[in-house]
Image (tube, rainbow, N blue to C red; front, top):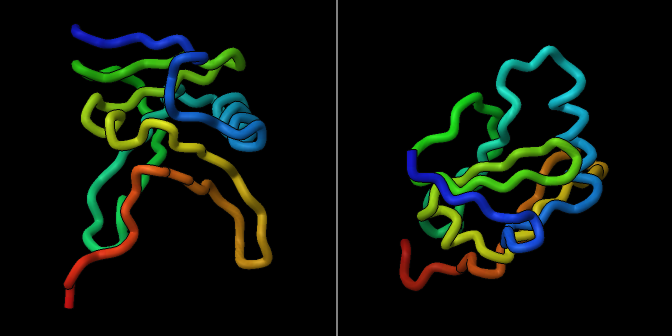
Length: 115
């Protein structure tokens, strides 16, 4: 299997302390079989990228793998990784709800000429 392992100091997807805490608790809180967090990215037209976080149990070929110090292992496919460099993942609680947010400086949120 051809995977690329990256040290968490060099991995260019960053977790806030709160995001890391929530992910760590999710891994530890259940008898979870799937303990690897897959970060995914899909094009979403005019609204920019659509991000995903899913727990999986397998690393696929050409995945980039990063293991954080608090037992969090993140994987992402190499194509998505190139579009997500310097993305900051946070977890927020607001009056409208709570959840993960993605601050991606590479994301273009405007569309030139969609109807």
